Image (cartoon, rainbow, N blue to C red; front, side, top):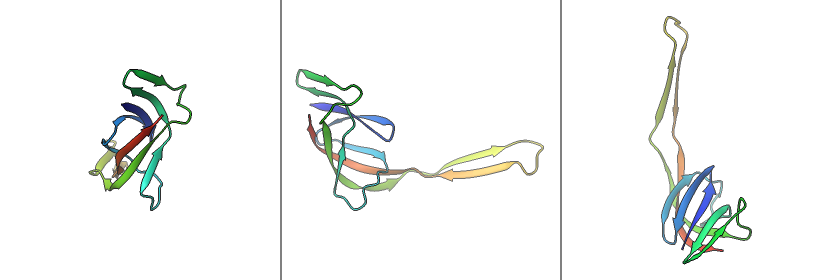
Length: 104
């Protein structure tokens, strides 16, 4: 059994006991996360397709922790313009989730 869920404008294929990294969620000090935007569920030979989401379906996950990705530097420069330099850094935050169960 597996499902395709949407979180953070990205889609993930998940099965029981999978560990996924998703963009940081505003969960506070919660121990579990409930992903309710389920697009597709395949259970043995029965497939359920949402329009766009499946009503009543959700994926329950345990929160393993947070981490941050390596820093990405964006440098913009126009030649022959002394004041036209821009350097920006970005580190994306992630949450590690372990899929506990898929509820159809």
